[in-house]
Image (cartoon, rainbow over all chains, first blue to last red; front, side, top):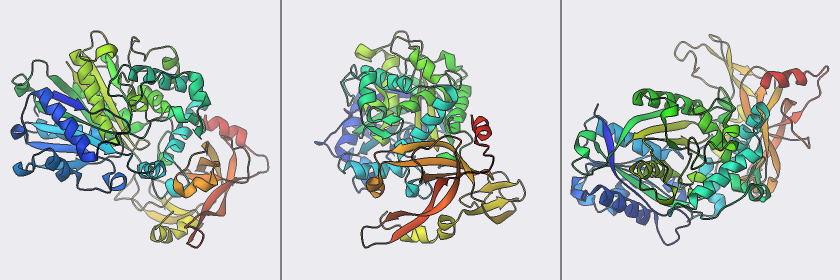
Length: 387
Length: 145
């Protein structure tokens, strides 16, 4: 197996991109990434694209061929593969690209992710997202996506004394970070009171506990590490790449307040990277709902089970804290175009490790982690990146 | 719940009753039925099993914003219930104003949804609180926590 590095990243502005189609977005991100890497289209060997539901959101499947086509690569006939793991589709595209390069099958691979969610009504979008849950034994019975996370939150509060204020602090922090990120969907500070006053979606989660519906795309260029310095001065090595699965339905899990898929993926990624969680300098984690970030920092091993809410309250996860979490603004405030999110997380960590994160730059960071979840925890994908 | 009639029809035994399966090799119960036991897989010995129906609320929420199929029912209560035999199910709670963790419940046969005013009506299982003699919900509550 060959060591793999990222030599270029690109990400569109996230948000309500009414001016852009799915194909416009993915082309925009792809061009940014290959310009960043200093490569040309002729050098690309393969493409992987994460996309959760082109079929529901824009009535377009066959996204693999589409993105090769709109990237101007149709006459080169290179393999282009769409991968899907609900909200972890982007992370999965990154992982498939890592495997393709590590195995020696391909040298220069683009990992992309895209979702165009605002061409349909909010109700249709919510129903498309609900397909990440168990349609027959959760959704048919009235479950929504926020409801599943709300039920995890309720039990976490009951067992560990986690408070809604602690969850709201996740949203407040991520909005604060997003204000410093030009690509973020929201550039507005919010307060705990704002979260409390926002309409209830699924008790105890309010609107401002939830990530938004977004359009956006992101891309990264991966090469074998031995070739990386031929392209750029500061390649970022991928020192851990792992994926875990679990039951599709929340109710079938061993423990409703732990994402075992995350625990397993993280353990394996840390073993590959040969590091401990405490060596990580920053992490982009899957905060599709505020409770998601609290569960993530526990399940990734940064704090003990049940201590996530307290760690947030103690300021561990803010920009100048012990372990900054979601410096991009996270899914909550940077936006969550589901297929793009996993690649956007890598984009943020690469910028931070290179020292190119502008006003939200954290000092002396060497190792960053990305954590992307599909559904309520049926898939989890963890990558560890090193300068 | 548009165009889901075949998906519903083929699961009617499980929709109308809590009919699942039991693996005699490892003694685990499954609802909805699994024909491949995740513990034993190829060496499983699966039999059909009708659940007694009694269970306990593990966690719950009240939904204020629903998908289009359920938008007219909001707000409604949803819970994850652990059946006494072990498996957990997701279902709506009815006949109670407040749902509590540890609450003892039983299944009730209810309308789940309709395909408009003239379309198919989907029936299935919801859950309602049950008063048991010498209710041990306090103890169950401690077990969950």
